[in-house]
Structure formats: structure tokens, C-alpha cells
Image (cartoon, rainbow, N blue to C red; front, side, top):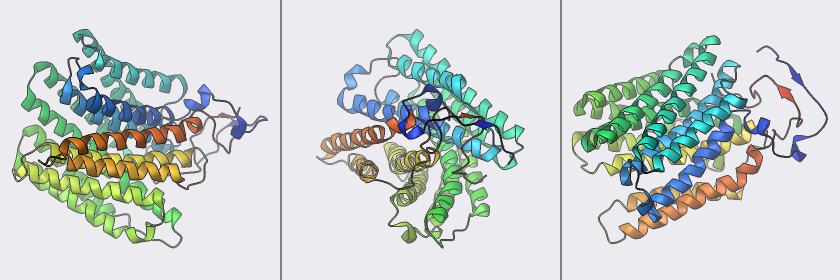
Length: 413
């Protein structure tokens, strides 16, 4: 890759004060912090103060939306904007443009909490513009660099935004059945993105961290997996459940086979890796649970949503937002005690949340314990990473002018 201009001036980043330039340098900085903060705040509101949720999108409808599009999808966009720099050599968004994208996200969160229809529509417009802007920025970088392997990524982000638009429309219409169908479509769009990203980066991270470890990239099975996910989305929109069940089961089974082929025993002493393996396995298991629900074997819709969302996405996310942030911030790739504690708390939150779905006398206590562990996990992440995110990389001068993406932690194209 061609060398791009950078100018060094005196002063080390380790001693630098917080800088807006550094904070808005790459997508992961504002969006990881925003997503993790909202993960803690939104769950605390939903479990401990549901009486405050009185907007057009209230109660469980608000909770489902904010978990999927306000938290999980936000982290995904932050990751893709950052990975897009490595894939293409072009930073899709930075500076004022990235700041503008972040402001749209904030306005959407505020609007969806405000109990007046005009604010609901304002929030919907901001959120859809958020996904559209991110997709266009990614597309410009990917297509300009002719990164053919990633041509589908902007389309997946657009699909995520389209599913959000359909969900919000169903909310306005008050159609609960259609709303749940749209939520499931959004969940599947996010699952396809997660499968695509994790299948590429987890083996890459593992082989870099464990000397002598060799892992197949599963390119062929990966195509089958992504194809199955895309077909499941299509059949979900058509409401043809046998097709949804068949292709979800195929995608989930491939994910579990891939985890075993990644030699999980070899990474047992590396927290930055085993948390990613565990999250990917949870996602695969969740797709199998969703397949069972689509066939009618599992009647309660909360099961696939929480196995995929909490045991899958959230465990994978807490690993990704630490591993990728450390790498792009120029920090040692080691998990300290606070990070491991955050991992264990998210795992505990997932287990307790699934326990709360069982019809037992422990359900309410398990739900509150799960929420407490969840909030503490993401509070720990913010406490540990916020000071790093608002300062320059530790290995770069504080006043460096850079026109290139971070290349020291290059992920596979």
C-alpha cells in the first residue's frame, strides 16, 4: 500500500490531553463508547425504571429496538467503519463527518424516549440517516479501492437500516405481529453481518496471538453460511417459516463446526480470544434455537432473541470492543483484570437472562441479577477504555497529522 503523508511534531501521545481530533479519528472511538454506554443505560431503564418508558415506542417494543439497533448495530457500524480503513486504505469517516454521524445517533436515542409523535418521527429520520450515511461512506471507500470481496458489506448495512425502517413503521401502525416479524428480520441481518466479520477476524486474531497455531479460513463453508443467512432473511420477509428454519439451521450448524475447527483448546489461556470463540459459538447456538422456533418446536419468541442477542452478539461484542480497540490504540494485546471481569460479567448476565426465561420462581430475581451484571460489565469497559479513546494512539505523537488508516493491526481483507 502506498505511503501517505504524515507529519510528526514533538510531544508523545502517552502524556497528551484529550483531543477531539483523536476522538473523531476512526469510527470505533465514538461508536464503541456510545454503544456500550447505551447498553448499560437502556437495560437499567428497562429493568429498573420501566415506568419512564412512555414514548410512542414504549415497554418491550422500545427495549427490543434499542438493544438491536441502538446497541448491537451501533457497535457493528463502528467496527465496519474501522475495518473498512484496513480493507481499503481509505478511512470512510473521520473528523466532522464522523462527529455528525454520532450526533444523529444521539438525537435518535433522545427522540425515541420522548413521549410525543413528532419526536418519534425525528428520531426515526435521524436513525435511518445514520445507517444510510454509514453505508454510503463504506461503499465509497470499498468501491473506490475495488475491494471486491467487501462489495456486499455496504448492502448489509443498508439492509439493517431497511429492517429498522420496517420495524418503526410497524410500531407506528400498532401491528404487533408484523412488528415481531420485522424485528426477526433485523436480527437475521445483524447475524449475517456478525457471521461475516467474525469468520474473518477471529482466526486471524488467533493465529497472530498463538505461536504455531494454524486455522483454516473456511472460505467455502463461509459462502454457504452467508448464502443460508441471506435466504433465511428473504424467507422471513415472505413469512415462509419452513425455509427460514432450514437455512437458519444450516447457518448455525456451520458456525458451530467452524468454532471446533478453530481449535478452541489452543486459546484457553488467552482471554482476548476465548471470549470471541464463546460469542461465536453462542451465535451459532442461537441460530439453531431460532430454527427450532421457526418450526414451532419452541413457542416462546424470547428464546431465539435472547440466545442470539445476549449469549451470541453481546459476548462477541465485549470481546471485539476490547481486542480491536487495544489494537487500533497501539496498546499491548493483553486483557487486564478489569477486562476479564467484564467478560465474566457479560457471560453471567447471559446465563442469568436465559434462566429468567424459565417458568420458575427465580425468574424475577434472575432478571434483576442479569441486569446488574450487565450494567457493571459495560461500566467497567467504559471506565477502562474511555480515557484511551479520547487520546491519540500511545505510539503516535500527539500532534501528528495523518491521512492514513491504522495499519499496525491490519485485519484480513
